[in-house]
Image (cartoon, rainbow, N blue to C red; front, side, top):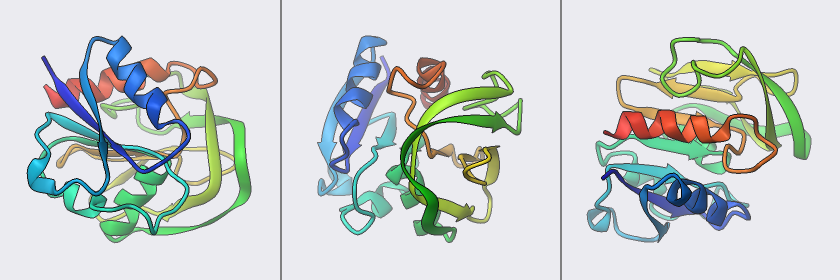
Length: 182
């Protein structure tokens, strides 16, 4: 059975990420972001959302564990910033219903979704430039990098929250990530 650790960056939806995976039959643990990297023993990691990019604990070190990583909201921004991308304040701020455009129908994370998919996202901060090796895989009228992938390293990030009911086909995003972890 695939084992996933959800890294807790103290976001308001972190428990929903854990629950969504558990409800899918995944062996999943919620792990504090201060946990030493050598104590992480999982087939994949979800870097949760959170309120503050300066309170990310050991998240940068988890990117070197050679397991697939899915960053959600703040986790997406952590991946971008730590690997050489750019994160800046967004123009639209708080949570909203957003229609994202899937830019790569062969992307392992989002390629199976409808070309335009409604999601729930916060844009207080957002990725404005992806790191080298990443491809922008979704955008919107609100944000130029709603999602990114580095398929060579199995690193994925989404600005939106697949774990909430407001996001269409959010469970499918998790299913696609789990496939990368097998």
